[in-house]
Each structure stands twice: as structure tokens, then as C-alpha cells.
Length: 356
Image (tube, rainbow, N blue to C red; front, side, top):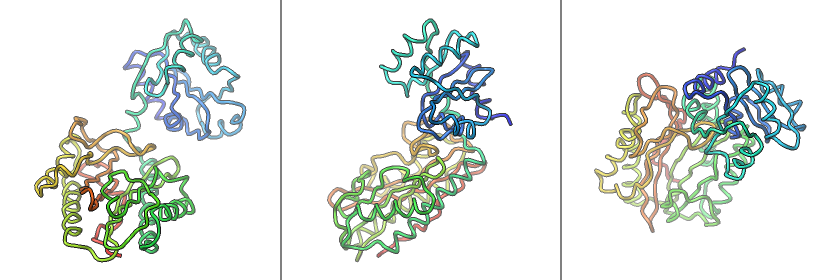
């Protein structure tokens, strides 16, 4: 069966007048080939698709990389690459300029000569923006696992334990239920630390009468989920309720009006305008959302600077927040798919004002 992703990449090569592209990014390699090993490279030409790896994976790679010619490289990857390019009489090859460090570039430049290296950016990432049916099915499973993890945390979360202890419980639950790992360093930030937008779990002991913000996700079969929920331990104050209700209103308003055809900036404004209306615009300093897929931060972005047009098949987060130093902060986040008419939520955990 033809690899549709490789076919689309070849169309990109034609549009850029490139004869071939050499893929060094591990994420892009897996996206194109399905190969999950820790070491390997992909070379796509107009006629062939090569997966270049080492001795350790010569059994695994052919099983996973259907439609690819698997090539075992020796000590020098550039030497093997040069042989493959020479066999097809290719005089120039694109390389991922955002992935290749300068020292590696110099090595390839010297060892591939006279083949010319052509820097390219986003050549695979632009394909990854649009999720196919199979990808969306996996992402829904990853989102479901995140939802189950939040439900589990509501059962065990209590004052007197550290944020790190709760983060470990969370990661163990996700792994026990099929995740490869967490999508990123788990954020559990309590009390005044909940005002830190990216306050990863610390040794702070969770107390009473304070926010606990949990931002986490499951990496499942190569795809990420990303969810944030904020709860209150003990007795909430009127201020706790006020901040929570404003963030929830902003998030729900964005979900209701998010649709294909709008720019990332317009989507960002949906949440930002609500929070600004209540006087907390300065306390919402990050973007409203970001793309999600094989990496936790992908294109497109829902930010003030984004002119990207949202289109069906894109998966983004919607995550407004308010952060008050010395008091605490709230963020509420869901993963959604842009559809023909609006959105479809992947994460479905309750957003009620929860007091533990």
C-alpha cells in the first residue's frame, strides 16, 4: 500500500524543486516511516524511500517501515547517504535546518561533496499539522487516558502530600494504563506556586484553602494529550471563585466560537477579550493555545501574532489562565479538533468548580 505521507512529501519536494530530502528529526522519521527505534534517518527521493539505521534495528526496521528500503549504515552515515544519492544521480539534497546542529552540517557538507545541501524548514511539520483518521483515533485514546488520570487524582489528592508525590502518582497511573510516558514534565502547582504558568511539580507540601493546578498529558503510541484542571483544597474564598469563573467563561466562550477559517490571532482574542473585560488582561501572559500531535507544542498557535488560518484536521489546545503572584492561578485546558463546522473536544473532564 502506498505511503500517503511520503506521497505528500514528494509533492512538497516538487513544489520546492528539490530532488531529495534527508530527515534527521526523530519525530519526523517516525511520522513518515512508522519506525520507533532510537536511531535512524529517512531519505526520500522522487523514486524511493530509504530508512537508514544501524545493526541493532535490522530486524525491527523492516517490520515497522512498510514501503521503505531499509539500509544498514556503517561507521559513517554521510558515506552511506552519499552512496544512495550517487546511485540516483542526485546533485542536491534538502536537510532539516531546524534539527541539524552546525557541527553536523559541516560534517555532511564535507563528506557529501560535491552534493549540495539545501536548507529546508517545516517540510514535514506542515504535513503533520493535518491529522488523519488514524492519528485522531490515537489522540482520542491519549485524551481519554488523561481524563481517567484526572478522575484518579480527584480520588487521591489531599493536603499534606508534596506536589512531587502527586506527580509521581499521576505518571504511574498513566504508564500503568498504557502510556509510554507523560507528554511533558508534569505541572502540579499549589498555593502561591499555582501562579507560575509552568510551575512543574516541586517538594512543596499541598495545604488547605488554596488552588492546585494540574497540567499534564499522556504520550500514547507516539501522540500527546495535554489537559489542565484547577481545583481548590479546603475552603475557597470569594477570590478563588471569582478567578475560576472568569477563566472558565473565557475557555467556554472560545470553545463555543472557535471555527475553521479564523486566524490563530482571532482565536486567541476570543479568550483574551473575556479576561481583559474583567480587568485581568495583564495576568494572562501566554497564548490561548497551541497545536498538538506527536509533539506537545506544534503548529498552529492560537496567539496574538499568529496569522495561520485554522482548518479542519488541525488539533489545538484551548487554555486561558489568570495568574496572581502571591495568591495563585487558574488555567483550564482542553484538546480539540478543528472540524468543518466548528470543533470536537478530545478531552472531556468536568470543569465544575471542584473543592476537595
